Length: 238
View (cartoon, rainbow, N blue to C red):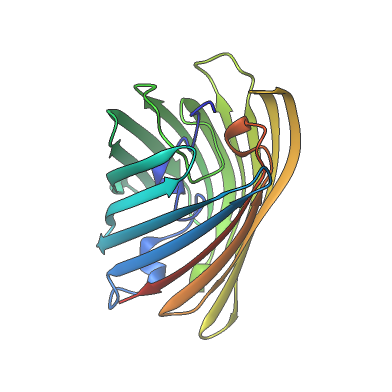
């Protein structure tokens, strides 16, 4: 499996245009348990604990499945205001086995915004839990409003390994009531994969309450491999 995964660690929790403050400063910790089922048999398990302080996140996690084995990871991301509506969003992640990854985003505009970003790794083995290439550029446009309202179009494209891999996301998040928000991410991926050229559609949907959430995702040709994944994640904030 080619480990060409998520370009922006800051995108891991949500796509561009979201705010850490949306989740509530009275619950700085988020614990997430993920269960992943694969069409070729077997399953994977992930546990992740995140701590948020102001506009910064710090996390530690572990993944395991029978084929890949186990991998521990730690990481951090933050948002640095540059004046006006501009911000810089750097991040870094380390994982057992020697993996190192980093990224930086530049975002400007409010409520309409645009974002550009770049991600790089040392190409060591890493089991990605997101949709997108790591060593890639990111571009996004969108709008965000009050109560976490967000609509965005995002492109993540490999610009290092000459695979032609591109992921397009159409993402929306919207409150359904005072205590419930829903989000939906529609994914289109194309590019060279482990078993030939990939053209596939995927999706992710989340129901988000103040103290807990549940997310279901379908990721065809995960990490541009031959494997299709169905992902269920549940989490609590405290």
